[in-house]
Image 1 (cartoon, rainbow, N blue to C red):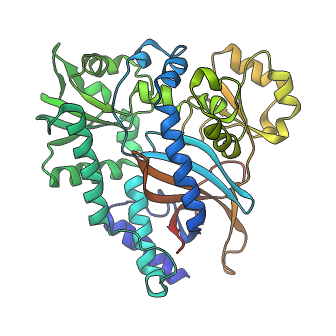
Image 2 (tube, rainbow, N blue to C red):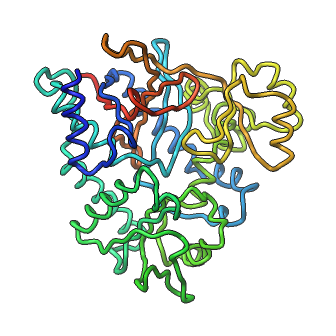
Length: 403
């Protein structure tokens, strides 16, 4: 197994992921997802898309969002990701992300482990696409989004936007470089910049003096509240620039507070959720509550069955396991403006290590889909059962459809 791991890590470094596995952890293992399970998940994703794109849903959920999120837009993010926990008795959606990191890295991980781990020789799993083929699919999705929005491929720069801190030392900077490279090979003028580098002249969005027409947004300032976003806010609201994800897509799809509406039937009539959709949503979205002054006591009493997440968190930052939750802490968080949701805890599946390493990891499943069609599987193997701790021997996990 050690020889396979060394070859696997070397292949990933050669492909453009630096710091494997010390800085960017990748597990030298894989997981196989039954075809029947994936077919069920595919159906669930289509229902999720239908529900969250209805006008009744959008009208209701943006009512309490910042004003910019009430600017309705038509963009569809091409790197949307659904995170699931799988158990023998079934699967559950944990959250949805419309700006999930790692889709290019995941494609590289899947292909590299397939080749060096002996899976190709055994026909054990469905063969993942080569990275060249996957890149063609990604650029085709970008091309479609551009034409859907502008009616043609627009002139101007296709900008990959991320926060300055992430561009300086983020673990996914290499992925942004890969994305820029494959866009340039398809003939898109492309660049990477932070919000602080943007300028506007009243009719155009500019980056380094170049007109920007298309923004691939990786920022975690989900409502573009920082002052540096002012040029993007103006250009997007004027309709002169495509940006995905954006405050509207975040407010209608990714905000973790939406899990309460998806998991429970309290407002189905107002939201336009149909009975058959409700049955599927309630079966696969763990019960979730927005933490508020009225329910703190009740949630704390059953905290051992719950996990507490920041409503606008990402990458498991701010996640509170039950051992760290109490009435005083929740009330302090509410008093200081920190919004949290409490979600019924759902275990991950166990992934045994080999005899040399011993022990076990806890794995999840990430499904990437675009316009209702799944195009990539991924996973993460954590050292913790109640959170995400990605360091060796855990890390990003090669994931395949079982035949």
